[in-house]
Length: 607
Image (cartoon, rainbow, N blue to C red; front, side, top):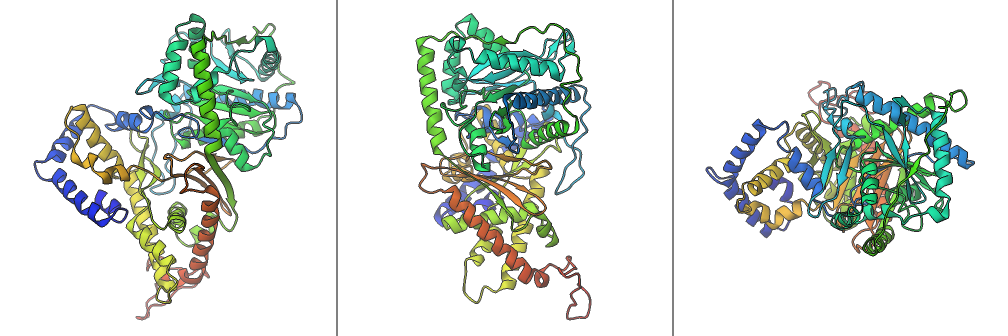
């Protein structure tokens, strides 16, 4: 499968060399057989043989800064706040919803998720939900640690951290075993807002340190914790349920693209870039200008968990009216507490370096959020095609039009059918996709409509088949990772398969894609995973598709605007092809034409 996935993406000479390497690795009695045996042994005494390897490779050993490079965001519809009290009401209502959702998780009362799309109906592992409010990504010099808080017999005082004007405040949400109601939460948020306005109390924007590369942040943190005040403040942040970031107005037009940018990096140091703590899994952002959403640290859970949580919260806020007026207030609320920091000259130096790096990241990110309104998944389903496979083939056609070649592509596939399952990769740049995109670029009369539609069907079928392999644990990326990592664990020399140039190419995902469908009106986006790549997140709705395409400005190869413009053209061409030809070229098992009539075969039978 590895050879099939890579053969058409690399030069012929390189492929010949790789084929020899692969055959040697897979030979009877060879290194591959030995490592496979060890991997099978590992699988017998672990709940999920790939989970730790995957988590370290995908997230914890990655040294890049979390904003843009790793942390996806969910962007809410623009809110129309007329005053500060409006935004604080929204925040209090949201926090009530968060506490309600957490109580469902704690009580194991969340309904079990079932698979959608291919092989729908299978129950899925719910383990990731337990990490939403209880984990923390601790920076390390060489590798981070995903810390999970242990539940204690005695209920602790639960708190969230409110970030406001780059300051951090402790907001206790459970006091004397009683959860604060919405009115109390509003009162506390008002107090925090007033406290943040006291200029002489303001401290440096320590949150900026968490936006830096992981090794740099680990180094800065080791200096910070030398002081007991800093240790106490860090402890409060690391043990909180989540962050609520009350952002200042950004001064930019609230387009979808601008809101996505602001959610991804806060707009930099001169806007809300320091009003974050990126190590915490959930940061709920509420901008005074109506720019709202969630920033998610990705290592504890996947996008679907983020979607389920945020959709619950939006439904909660819409369905349960604000209880500010009727609620009886707690008689004496202890004041929220500002977290203090002692900043040595070394910390000031780290802060300056972090601020500079964030500014460069802000300038570098090239983002385009676009709503394609030509059609949506309803039209695609009428073609008897999978909307996800169709969009993936469209992305391949777009990349080919922009760059004249196909590249290794990543599409995340949930493997939550397995205990502790996270994701594997659907390799969308299939040989079948290449045949289709080449045919679409051929203007000669020979490449007739019927051949193009046949090649589209073949590409979609190949994509669908690979999707099924991936979600049932039969794809190649996790398996190859397991073989590579167990060799390292056994302190063996790195097998040639993994030092071969083709392997490095195979995991350099120039096109990183993900379908994140939502029911509520919102969209997900993220940055590219390599310097010369694209991040492409899409949300197919009945009559439109939202595309969020990102790239880096300092790459001469990429342009988000050009990619989106080309994508829209490709989607229209594919629609034209389907309308013109799909009635004649459907496989025999697709019996109906678009007009509802049946097609009669030459032997007189109906197809």
